[in-house]
Length: 639
Image (cartoon, rainbow, N blue to C red):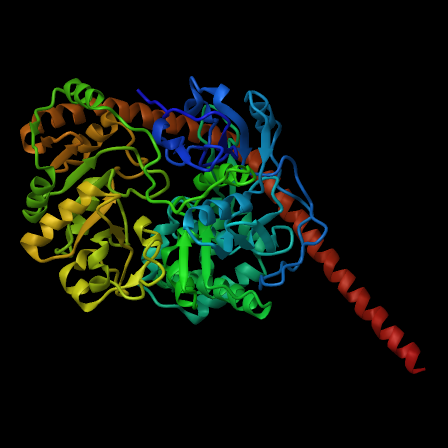
């Protein structure tokens, strides 16, 4: 049974609900203690679920909630000053339309029985980083795709432990181009799912090189054809309570754009995009220095900073300390909004965050009931760390289920899959088991006391590396010991482990190192392809049976051996075929509905394109007229 921990009186419920993706709640006490946080996807089992948060709020103790902090503005706000001092990419023709929430958004909020406090989406993001960082003062940098009702898609902020967070410079969606839009479109152009698979583009980039011709094409898209590029994708079924909203790709426009890249490999396209994105961010930081905004520490949040390579570039820019919000994408905005509202309370006391174990937990009795439900054979051990380490040494792949579920996009040891990192092709083995198509190697887990033997440039980034949010250059020892977790460019994205926060994982690695001399093991999220990270014991068992992991460990010393349960796995897979067929039929029905809507949809799209063409033509005529008047004025003055 899913239960939220006891909530202190006068707590704040943070809510990220956009009607399109990443519906999430977070609960913060009036003094700033994080009580609970989870995205809807973990319990609905639909990745990036953007539907109503009703499932998260069933039987919710509203009498304990003082306010609901919503991670966007109450209504569309058009600022008077839209000029950025640091953003290098103004739009040639400013927008005159603003994204705004529909009526269903407000209808749902009206059903929540607590006062609402609306918090700017970008401010929510930076709050989710700064108040967890442990810094006394820092520069904060947000950057994402924006949010309905919010005029900004990013910005720079001054954050102070005593004085709070204040904007320095913000990027208006009406006047500046978003590098996130370019990344999203290229993800679609290369055949991946936008807003889900951008990380694959980051991994693919390591296999290519920036290409001059490709750079010109991408810069043309970014600077010249920005509106047409953005119109290649659009949300279908926003605010639906039945069908998870779909980010639909306009296939005809996609073909027009992909034709521009003929003769350029997808690896070089990805590498060029990564290079342009990094240069874009560094130019913003250079411009910030010119404004005199010189800080020792920086905090990052927003979807762009899920890109761990960009984060490494920012650290190397010259900051002494860096911290990236562990839930850096929109799920983190729920926590940030709650923390921002709590920070206005007199007794607010933010603390450096130790872990992201903020989700649902399951008792031993619930675990044993789940095991019995599937009729699984199991063994018990009093020494799980030694047992698991021995199995990893023998080449086994082990699923871990313990404690509270992680909050955010990373599995950090409580819902993880572990393996040895010594065999380069272990990635292929794991990907096949989990039905994944990844290009970036899996991440290493390394004890914090061994970290400097494995990674370079750690100073000032040790804390954020506990959450697997940044890459580092690997030492020669790391490359030799653990090739399966080293990227082709010689970097890795580690999770640093300490005894206090990760006792079982720490002991596993300690036992593993005693017997092998090797510092690191593989950690990847416990989920099969296109499913969220497992939440419950039942989710873990179904993932175990589907993927054929060698062992599954449950907290309490329960060990499930796949070899002893092969017949149960076979029966499960046979029975599950019917469910898969039903799912496919449902998807087919959705696709048919989309096709029925497509004629209307694309005619509306063409109308938008025509409107943009007219605006562009009008702008050209105005420019010609200005030049003509200027010429006549000069002629008159000279006469």
